[in-house]
Length: 337
Image 1 (cartoon, rainbow, N blue to C red):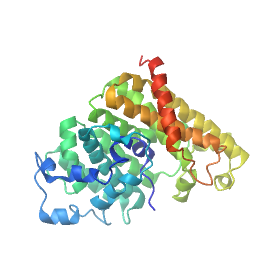
Image 2: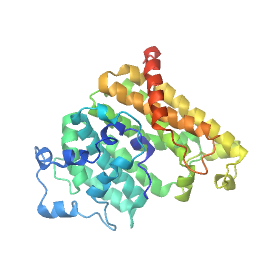
Image 3: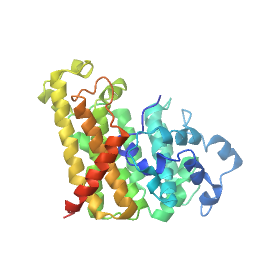
Protein backbone atom coordinates (compact mmCIF):
# COMPACT_ATOMS: atom_id res chain seq x y z
CA UNK A 1 0.00 0.00 0.00
CA UNK A 2 1.52 3.30 -1.06
CA UNK A 3 1.84 6.34 1.11
CA UNK A 4 -1.18 8.62 1.27
CA UNK A 5 -0.91 11.85 -0.66
CA UNK A 6 1.25 14.40 1.15
CA UNK A 7 -0.64 16.29 3.83
CA UNK A 8 -0.86 19.61 2.10
CA UNK A 9 -2.70 17.93 -0.73
CA UNK A 10 -4.63 15.11 0.90
CA UNK A 11 -6.43 17.44 3.27
CA UNK A 12 -7.17 20.04 0.61
CA UNK A 13 -9.10 17.97 -1.91
CA UNK A 14 -11.96 16.57 0.17
CA UNK A 15 -14.82 18.03 -1.79
CA UNK A 16 -13.68 16.93 -5.20
CA UNK A 17 -12.82 13.37 -4.36
CA UNK A 18 -14.52 11.72 -1.44
CA UNK A 19 -17.95 11.07 -2.92
CA UNK A 20 -18.45 10.03 -6.50
CA UNK A 21 -14.75 9.42 -6.99
CA UNK A 22 -15.50 6.63 -9.44
CA UNK A 23 -17.33 8.98 -11.76
CA UNK A 24 -15.08 12.00 -11.38
CA UNK A 25 -12.05 10.85 -13.40
CA UNK A 26 -14.21 10.47 -16.49
CA UNK A 27 -15.21 14.10 -16.19
CA UNK A 28 -11.64 15.28 -16.49
CA UNK A 29 -10.51 12.83 -19.15
CA UNK A 30 -13.01 13.85 -21.80
CA UNK A 31 -11.01 14.63 -24.93
CA UNK A 32 -13.54 17.32 -25.81
CA UNK A 33 -12.54 19.29 -22.74
CA UNK A 34 -8.82 18.79 -23.21
CA UNK A 35 -8.82 19.59 -26.92
CA UNK A 36 -10.45 23.03 -26.74
CA UNK A 37 -7.05 24.69 -27.00
CA UNK A 38 -4.67 21.75 -26.53
CA UNK A 39 -3.93 19.46 -29.50
CA UNK A 40 -5.37 16.00 -29.08
CA UNK A 41 -2.84 13.33 -28.04
CA UNK A 42 -1.79 10.73 -30.55
CA UNK A 43 -3.00 7.15 -30.29
CA UNK A 44 0.47 6.11 -29.14
CA UNK A 45 0.47 8.73 -26.40
CA UNK A 46 -2.97 7.64 -25.21
CA UNK A 47 -1.90 4.02 -25.08
CA UNK A 48 1.24 4.75 -23.09
CA UNK A 49 0.02 7.61 -20.91
CA UNK A 50 2.35 10.01 -22.76
CA UNK A 51 6.06 9.96 -23.41
CA UNK A 52 7.75 7.55 -21.00
CA UNK A 53 9.71 9.34 -18.30
CA UNK A 54 13.40 8.36 -18.11
CA UNK A 55 14.98 5.62 -16.02
CA UNK A 56 11.77 4.30 -14.47
CA UNK A 57 8.19 3.49 -15.31
CA UNK A 58 6.03 6.55 -14.73
CA UNK A 59 2.91 5.94 -12.66
CA UNK A 60 -0.05 5.42 -14.99
CA UNK A 61 -2.77 8.09 -15.15
CA UNK A 62 -5.41 5.47 -14.44
CA UNK A 63 -3.53 4.19 -11.41
CA UNK A 64 -3.09 7.73 -10.12
CA UNK A 65 -6.77 8.64 -10.38
CA UNK A 66 -7.88 5.30 -8.95
CA UNK A 67 -6.32 6.37 -5.64
CA UNK A 68 -8.65 9.35 -5.31
CA UNK A 69 -11.33 7.49 -3.37
CA UNK A 70 -8.88 6.06 -0.81
CA UNK A 71 -7.34 9.34 0.35
CA UNK A 72 -7.76 10.49 3.93
CA UNK A 73 -10.27 13.29 3.32
CA UNK A 74 -12.53 15.39 5.53
CA UNK A 75 -16.29 15.83 5.07
CA UNK A 76 -18.79 17.48 2.67
CA UNK A 77 -17.49 16.18 -0.65
CA UNK A 78 -20.83 16.52 -2.49
CA UNK A 79 -21.14 20.22 -1.92
CA UNK A 80 -18.97 21.72 -4.64
CA UNK A 81 -20.30 22.33 -8.16
CA UNK A 82 -19.18 20.01 -10.95
CA UNK A 83 -16.95 22.64 -12.58
CA UNK A 84 -14.92 23.07 -9.38
CA UNK A 85 -14.70 19.32 -8.82
CA UNK A 86 -13.31 18.85 -12.33
CA UNK A 87 -10.64 21.49 -11.80
CA UNK A 88 -9.67 20.11 -8.40
CA UNK A 89 -9.45 16.62 -9.84
CA UNK A 90 -7.13 17.84 -12.58
CA UNK A 91 -4.88 19.41 -9.95
CA UNK A 92 -5.15 16.29 -7.79
CA UNK A 93 -3.97 14.14 -10.69
CA UNK A 94 -0.85 16.23 -11.16
CA UNK A 95 -0.13 16.50 -7.44
CA UNK A 96 -0.58 12.76 -6.93
CA UNK A 97 1.70 12.05 -9.86
CA UNK A 98 4.42 14.24 -8.35
CA UNK A 99 4.04 12.53 -4.98
CA UNK A 100 4.08 9.02 -6.41
CA UNK A 101 7.25 9.79 -8.35
CA UNK A 102 8.87 11.21 -5.23
CA UNK A 103 7.82 8.36 -2.93
CA UNK A 104 7.35 5.21 -4.99
CA UNK A 105 9.00 5.37 -8.42
CA UNK A 106 11.90 3.06 -9.17
CA UNK A 107 15.04 4.31 -10.82
CA UNK A 108 16.25 7.91 -10.82
CA UNK A 109 13.48 9.89 -9.14
CA UNK A 110 15.26 13.21 -9.62
CA UNK A 111 15.42 12.57 -13.37
CA UNK A 112 11.73 11.72 -13.36
CA UNK A 113 10.90 14.95 -11.54
CA UNK A 114 13.05 16.91 -13.99
CA UNK A 115 11.19 15.34 -16.89
CA UNK A 116 7.86 16.18 -15.28
CA UNK A 117 8.88 19.82 -14.86
CA UNK A 118 9.85 19.95 -18.54
CA UNK A 119 6.38 18.68 -19.35
CA UNK A 120 4.90 21.44 -17.20
CA UNK A 121 7.04 23.91 -19.16
CA UNK A 122 5.48 22.58 -22.36
CA UNK A 123 2.00 23.24 -20.99
CA UNK A 124 2.79 26.85 -20.12
CA UNK A 125 4.56 27.36 -23.45
CA UNK A 126 1.39 26.39 -25.29
CA UNK A 127 2.84 23.07 -26.43
CA UNK A 128 1.36 19.61 -25.93
CA UNK A 129 2.61 17.92 -22.75
CA UNK A 130 3.59 14.29 -23.08
CA UNK A 131 1.91 13.05 -19.90
CA UNK A 132 -1.87 12.71 -19.81
CA UNK A 133 -2.18 14.15 -16.31
CA UNK A 134 -0.21 17.25 -17.29
CA UNK A 135 -2.37 17.63 -20.42
CA UNK A 136 -5.48 17.48 -18.26
CA UNK A 137 -4.25 20.52 -16.37
CA UNK A 138 -4.60 22.61 -19.53
CA UNK A 139 -8.26 23.67 -19.22
CA UNK A 140 -7.85 24.30 -15.48
CA UNK A 141 -4.73 26.44 -15.90
CA UNK A 142 -6.40 28.50 -18.63
CA UNK A 143 -9.85 28.91 -17.11
CA UNK A 144 -8.56 29.67 -13.61
CA UNK A 145 -5.49 31.71 -14.69
CA UNK A 146 -3.19 29.63 -12.48
CA UNK A 147 0.50 30.63 -12.56
CA UNK A 148 3.12 27.88 -12.84
CA UNK A 149 4.87 28.58 -9.53
CA UNK A 150 2.62 26.48 -7.24
CA UNK A 151 3.11 23.44 -9.48
CA UNK A 152 6.86 24.01 -9.60
CA UNK A 153 7.06 24.19 -5.81
CA UNK A 154 5.30 20.82 -5.49
CA UNK A 155 7.97 19.31 -7.73
CA UNK A 156 10.69 21.06 -5.71
CA UNK A 157 9.30 19.57 -2.49
CA UNK A 158 9.68 16.07 -3.87
CA UNK A 159 13.19 16.83 -5.06
CA UNK A 160 13.98 17.90 -1.51
CA UNK A 161 12.56 14.63 -0.19
CA UNK A 162 15.19 12.79 -2.23
CA UNK A 163 18.01 14.83 -0.70
CA UNK A 164 16.90 15.80 2.82
CA UNK A 165 15.74 13.32 5.45
CA UNK A 166 15.84 15.43 8.62
CA UNK A 167 15.25 19.07 9.57
CA UNK A 168 17.45 20.77 12.10
CA UNK A 169 15.09 23.58 13.13
CA UNK A 170 11.39 24.36 13.04
CA UNK A 171 12.11 27.18 10.60
CA UNK A 172 13.72 24.64 8.28
CA UNK A 173 10.56 22.56 8.42
CA UNK A 174 8.39 25.60 7.74
CA UNK A 175 10.49 26.33 4.65
CA UNK A 176 9.78 22.78 3.45
CA UNK A 177 6.06 23.36 4.00
CA UNK A 178 6.34 26.41 1.72
CA UNK A 179 7.13 23.93 -1.04
CA UNK A 180 5.08 20.89 -0.11
CA UNK A 181 1.84 22.24 1.38
CA UNK A 182 1.26 25.94 0.83
CA UNK A 183 1.12 25.73 -2.98
CA UNK A 184 -1.99 23.57 -2.72
CA UNK A 185 -3.90 26.28 -0.91
CA UNK A 186 -2.87 28.74 -3.60
CA UNK A 187 -4.13 26.37 -6.29
CA UNK A 188 -7.47 25.93 -4.54
CA UNK A 189 -7.92 29.69 -4.13
CA UNK A 190 -7.16 30.21 -7.82
CA UNK A 191 -9.73 27.56 -8.75
CA UNK A 192 -12.45 29.25 -6.70
CA UNK A 193 -11.43 32.70 -7.91
CA UNK A 194 -10.52 34.07 -4.49
CA UNK A 195 -6.72 34.40 -4.65
CA UNK A 196 -5.69 37.70 -3.03
CA UNK A 197 -2.48 38.43 -1.10
CA UNK A 198 -4.27 38.44 2.27
CA UNK A 199 -6.15 35.21 1.56
CA UNK A 200 -3.02 33.51 0.26
CA UNK A 201 -1.17 34.36 3.49
CA UNK A 202 -4.01 32.99 5.61
CA UNK A 203 -4.13 29.90 3.43
CA UNK A 204 -0.42 29.34 4.06
CA UNK A 205 -1.07 29.14 7.80
CA UNK A 206 -3.81 26.57 7.32
CA UNK A 207 -1.84 24.47 4.84
CA UNK A 208 1.28 24.44 6.99
CA UNK A 209 -0.85 23.49 10.01
CA UNK A 210 -2.36 20.62 8.05
CA UNK A 211 1.04 19.51 6.81
CA UNK A 212 2.42 19.40 10.33
CA UNK A 213 -0.68 17.62 11.61
CA UNK A 214 -0.20 14.70 9.28
CA UNK A 215 3.53 14.61 9.90
CA UNK A 216 2.75 14.18 13.59
CA UNK A 217 0.22 11.45 12.78
CA UNK A 218 2.65 9.57 10.55
CA UNK A 219 5.91 9.59 12.52
CA UNK A 220 6.30 5.81 12.23
CA UNK A 221 5.44 5.69 8.53
CA UNK A 222 7.88 8.48 7.73
CA UNK A 223 10.58 6.84 9.83
CA UNK A 224 10.17 3.65 7.82
CA UNK A 225 10.96 5.73 4.73
CA UNK A 226 14.06 7.13 6.38
CA UNK A 227 12.53 10.55 7.05
CA UNK A 228 12.14 12.40 10.34
CA UNK A 229 10.09 15.58 10.12
CA UNK A 230 10.20 16.37 13.83
CA UNK A 231 12.87 19.09 14.10
CA UNK A 232 16.13 17.87 15.60
CA UNK A 233 16.20 20.86 17.95
CA UNK A 234 12.85 19.76 19.40
CA UNK A 235 14.01 16.17 19.87
CA UNK A 236 17.01 17.47 21.80
CA UNK A 237 14.91 19.94 23.80
CA UNK A 238 12.65 17.15 25.09
CA UNK A 239 15.48 14.67 25.59
CA UNK A 240 14.30 12.23 22.90
CA UNK A 241 16.85 9.83 21.48
CA UNK A 242 16.59 8.04 18.11
CA UNK A 243 15.37 4.98 20.03
CA UNK A 244 12.39 7.00 21.31
CA UNK A 245 11.12 7.22 17.72
CA UNK A 246 10.86 3.42 17.60
CA UNK A 247 9.50 2.65 21.08
CA UNK A 248 6.01 1.22 21.43
CA UNK A 249 4.28 2.46 23.44
CA UNK A 250 5.79 5.91 23.15
CA UNK A 251 8.08 7.12 25.91
CA UNK A 252 6.97 9.91 28.27
CA UNK A 253 9.54 12.21 26.67
CA UNK A 254 8.15 11.56 23.21
CA UNK A 255 4.56 12.12 24.38
CA UNK A 256 5.58 15.49 25.85
CA UNK A 257 7.30 16.39 22.59
CA UNK A 258 4.26 15.42 20.56
CA UNK A 259 1.97 17.47 22.81
CA UNK A 260 4.21 20.48 22.10
CA UNK A 261 4.08 19.88 18.34
CA UNK A 262 0.29 19.43 18.38
CA UNK A 263 -0.05 22.83 20.04
CA UNK A 264 2.10 24.39 17.34
CA UNK A 265 -0.03 22.94 14.56
CA UNK A 266 -3.25 23.97 16.30
CA UNK A 267 -2.00 27.57 16.59
CA UNK A 268 -1.29 27.67 12.86
CA UNK A 269 -4.79 26.45 12.04
CA UNK A 270 -6.22 29.07 14.36
CA UNK A 271 -4.10 31.82 12.81
CA UNK A 272 -5.37 30.88 9.35
CA UNK A 273 -8.98 30.57 10.50
CA UNK A 274 -10.00 34.10 9.40
CA UNK A 275 -9.80 32.82 5.83
CA UNK A 276 -13.14 31.11 6.51
CA UNK A 277 -14.76 34.45 7.24
CA UNK A 278 -13.10 36.03 4.18
CA UNK A 279 -14.89 33.63 1.83
CA UNK A 280 -18.51 32.99 0.93
CA UNK A 281 -20.57 30.09 -0.35
CA UNK A 282 -18.91 26.83 -1.36
CA UNK A 283 -15.32 28.10 -0.87
CA UNK A 284 -16.13 29.14 2.69
CA UNK A 285 -17.56 25.75 3.52
CA UNK A 286 -14.61 24.02 1.87
CA UNK A 287 -11.99 25.93 3.86
CA UNK A 288 -13.99 25.42 7.06
CA UNK A 289 -13.83 21.71 6.29
CA UNK A 290 -10.06 21.86 5.89
CA UNK A 291 -9.64 23.58 9.25
CA UNK A 292 -12.14 21.24 10.90
CA UNK A 293 -10.38 18.17 9.53
CA UNK A 294 -7.04 19.34 10.88
CA UNK A 295 -8.42 20.21 14.29
CA UNK A 296 -10.22 16.88 14.55
CA UNK A 297 -6.99 15.06 13.64
CA UNK A 298 -5.08 16.93 16.36
CA UNK A 299 -7.83 16.05 18.84
CA UNK A 300 -7.40 12.39 17.85
CA UNK A 301 -3.68 12.56 18.62
CA UNK A 302 -4.41 14.04 22.03
CA UNK A 303 -7.08 11.40 22.77
CA UNK A 304 -4.41 8.80 22.05
CA UNK A 305 -2.25 10.34 24.78
CA UNK A 306 0.02 11.80 22.09
CA UNK A 307 1.23 8.27 21.33
CA UNK A 308 1.42 7.98 17.55
CA UNK A 309 3.98 5.19 17.47
CA UNK A 310 1.47 2.36 17.18
CA UNK A 311 -0.28 3.91 14.19
CA UNK A 312 -1.73 7.20 13.05
CA UNK A 313 -4.68 8.34 15.21
CA UNK A 314 -7.57 9.30 12.90
CA UNK A 315 -10.77 11.15 13.78
CA UNK A 316 -14.15 9.68 12.98
CA UNK A 317 -16.35 11.25 10.34
CA UNK A 318 -18.78 12.25 13.07
CA UNK A 319 -16.11 14.17 14.96
CA UNK A 320 -15.12 15.97 11.78
CA UNK A 321 -18.72 17.04 11.22
CA UNK A 322 -18.99 18.33 14.80
CA UNK A 323 -15.75 20.24 14.38
CA UNK A 324 -16.99 21.70 11.10
CA UNK A 325 -19.98 23.16 12.92
CA UNK A 326 -17.68 24.67 15.52
CA UNK A 327 -15.43 26.26 12.91
CA UNK A 328 -18.36 27.82 11.07
CA UNK A 329 -19.73 29.20 14.36
CA UNK A 330 -16.36 30.59 15.38
CA UNK A 331 -15.85 32.21 11.98
CA UNK A 332 -18.40 34.89 12.86
CA UNK A 333 -15.93 36.28 15.38
CA UNK A 334 -12.80 36.10 13.22
CA UNK A 335 -11.36 39.06 11.37
CA UNK A 336 -8.95 39.17 8.46
CA UNK A 337 -7.12 42.31 9.58
